[in-house]
Picture 1 (cartoon, chains in turn blue, cyan):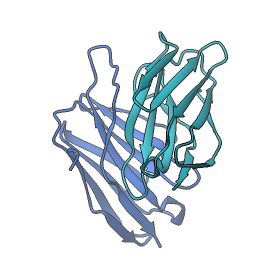
Picture 2 (spheres, each protein chain N blue to C red):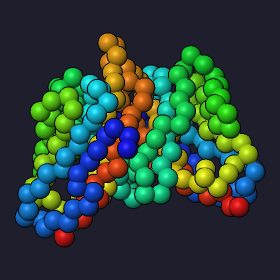
Picture 3 (spheres, chains in turn red, blue):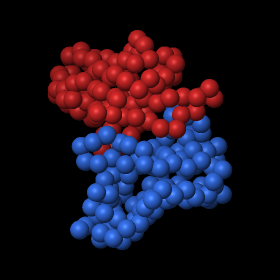
Picture 4 (cartoon, rainbow over the protein chains, first blue to last red):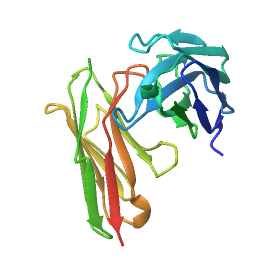
Length: 116
Length: 112
């Protein structure tokens, strides 16, 4: 639809489970992002991969682990999550110029995660 | 760090009226201010943006104004239509999206 696809669309998991979210972009972009969207913090940046290098966000708990095997794919590995981690997880991509500037984010449809 | 506030949190207008959403930011180094629209159940999409070297930008019924001295910027939608109903997010960034901070959003309802 828009060039950024996320799977699965919905995920229910227990606190002891391990699962992964997948994102793929078909736009030829060189930067990818994970955002968390919840009622408390509507659009909260979690991780950025720029030219396949990760930009750390120190406020994200270690139970969230990103992986970017190439510029088109991004994963978010989940383990021992808490109920408060229930949210919509949005992937996005963009094209950064040589100055590291990017103007437009292209979002995926998101994965609605429920942690029981 | 940067902090972006947005008002109002909810806004209802009659079809055809104008809608104004206001945002303030704290980091004077921010120089890029995008606005995203998120319809119910859909992904956020960029609708307009402005850089700090201009004070106003317009695209058909949508306009954004920026006051760098006061550190606030606003989204103006004229002749509103029911399809304008959505949540609107403002954001501020110094240079790139690894530093962008989004506002809490404004839920706009356009009543036919």
